[in-house]
Length: 91
Image 1 (tube, rainbow, N blue to C red):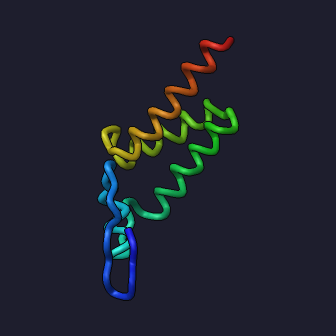
Image 2: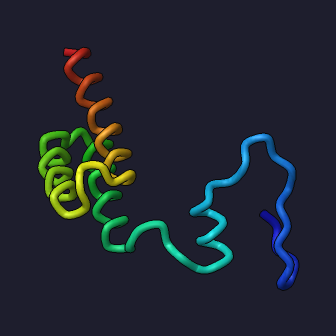
């Protein structure tokens, strides 16, 4: 996406653009509240640091607040499930 004054244009791409990226830029909106985004980022940090049990506890709390089918919760859960599988397989 390119901006020249008030004019927005999009370069050619075979992959398209995420709707949230376009809305975020053009309307100044966010895909999710900053506080929730911060909590999810914290869980990702726990995963990266190997604090998988704490990440699981924090994810369960996030699921209670947002719902287990929330797309952002599912992304975090997928990352945690992958790390759990890798750590169990590596032992």
